[in-house]
Length: 163
Image (cartoon, rainbow, N blue to C red; front, side):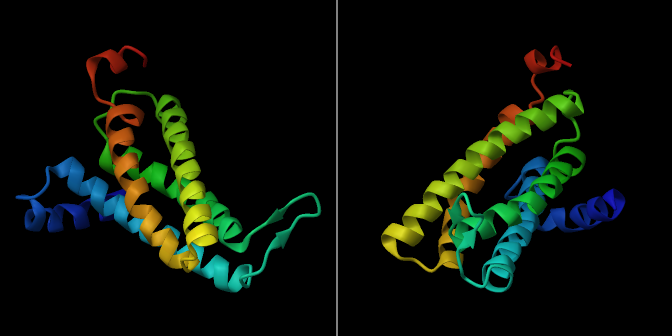
């Protein structure tokens, strides 16, 4: 699978070479596909799994847009990590468990940002949940890119000593 993904990325990279370095292009492509996958899962969950209704767990009631977000996250989190680790940031000298922990921390911050943005945009401003999710994604992607490149999969010498 890795070979096929890399082949497709290497084939399309020359079209974007003047705009991005190879790592940034791979991040944008892999992150973009995983983000679209996450939004698709959110849409399916919101409309067909939760049927736009609250999820009553007896001890807490979760709104359908938050439940949809959480369920989509459970699937898109591991796919995102594997794409970042094995396709985008292959040169990182950090061990997999360190990368996973750092990725998890930055993703938790992204989850918090998603939660806050969705709560505000849907419940306070009144945007349709899928539109709010797309809007939220733009802000979270910028945060995620800089966090993943400079923290989770850092390639600096000081971080290589932590292997």
